[in-house]
Length: 329
Ligand code: UDP
Image (tube, rainbow, N blue to C red; front, side):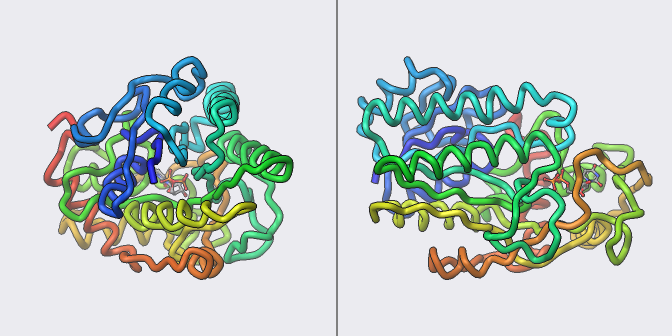
């Protein structure tokens, strides 16, 4: 199949492009390079620089490249920032995405794989999170993704539009050959921040809250390797060949790890002590989020390659060690 990867120069998108090629499909990338890195995409993949919300760009691109499926990764995804700058999140994650969907509809592309998030659940009543549990986001990021999930369902009910909304838990790790990996500016995510602190590139790592109702008082999250997310995308794409497909799937390992456990894993793998400071809770953070991945495993016939935190952290460490300045190297 020929797949347009929107946000294909970003962290998760670039890993997925590699797997699309390996799986024998073709990818075309659209990225505005605001957060993405041109060099994370190989030169033999057609690359368009542009905005996903610009229908005058997207519509002719879909036609010219004869795109069959769109995967959409291009979103702002920092919980704390979304609380401070909600409009940025609604404009890009909701408004621009609706324009992308409209461009698809205009030219008759009806298969869509959407990067959703566990943040759509808010503070869960029960754990692990099963797909059918109530959603109630507590930050604008989660709300922006839930708004699109709801739009997809409505469109899919109204016409022959097929979609998979894949709710990522915490994407982490890097390609096994360390050729691409995570490089955000500013970096806001725990694993890369802990690695940068271990490398001496940051003076201190702040732990946002040690008074949560969790075993060690720090937040629990479900860290999943970016290559395992990518393989789920490819399996989901193949499901979209069936008319009427509407998938909402939780993509996680199903294993909760605390902030302190992540720090310990980075210390073990790096052999370095990380200087930490206890800080206030970060607004918008639920205490615990982890998946029940059973439905995704069964629906997609999907198995993860990285099934523990240490292996995931090691792959991230290898990338950061090989590229201390990210893609600037
Ligand atoms: N976190 C932290 N210090 C940091 C960054 C993150 O303690 O400098 C915590 C954050 O509060 C959350 C967990 O690490 O509980 C994972 O945060 P991240 O931003 O990596 O992903 P999120 O779960 O927000 O998508």
